[in-house]
Length: 143
Image (cartoon, rainbow, N blue to C red; front, side, top):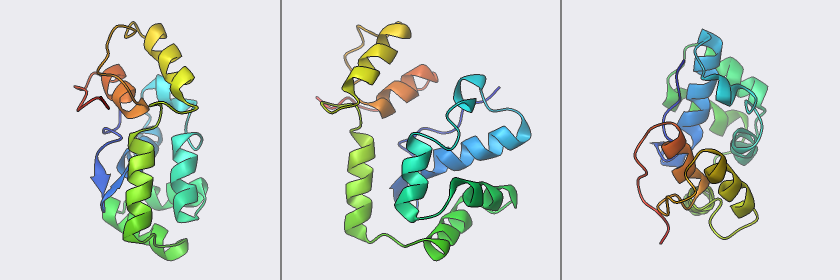
């Protein structure tokens, strides 16, 4: 079973999008890690498709057509909307900092404790947690 790429990785300058596309592809191939299957199309995935104004089902269909990441992103811009540079900056920073001193902090702290990461102070955001939980180095903490 496989994990998708880090949520911090960018496609077209946008964080999380590539991870969502990876999850769709891995699910279709039957190799998506079971821990991630319950979250397909919800949570961060839903925020991401809402950012473009497309449905998760439509995006998943495009991903299933064998398009590369950039082509799927371009499709999202055409079928939904093309965010400007300012909107992309706001999206990236919002997503990158999710769980750091906001309403998601309680969820982050609970997940850290459940995963045995309670003492890992470098895990300060959901992106940090995802990377640690999936065995990747944490790229940086918010402090």
